[in-house]
Length: 168
Image 1: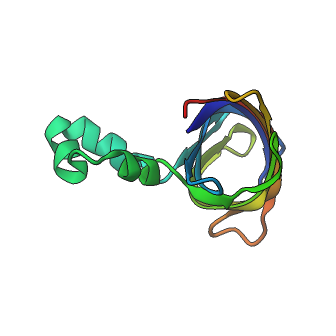
Image 2: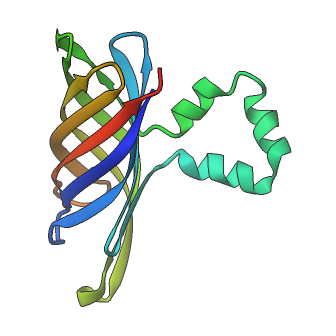
């Protein structure tokens, strides 16, 4: 499990570049497969995994609701609900992996004050990530990809960096 801080810049279809900051996670199942998620905030912008709405709603309703859904073996379920996509990590060296990713379960909220409108989008992205490991615990990542907001005719780009801590 790698959790860390992230900086991401996106260029949605009709908006200017948006800078965002927040948390990112990569939860590994074995040496190569991982599920990914980001919770990001920027000026007039929020991004969360779509499944987080379910987890937060159940938590709001009470501990009993979470227990009833996830019971004692909850960590794989929580990982799936807080993820928005997956990646496959190709080990190049002991300290370097390259990971193509696909994220299909994101939610973006963009408020454009100059246009006096707000937009809520389901979002997806596909791209590549480079993970560099410093020792066994510190991970530096950079990524770039194509971002698509469902319902829009064209997509945009995303790019960013993160620094994380490996809890495993």
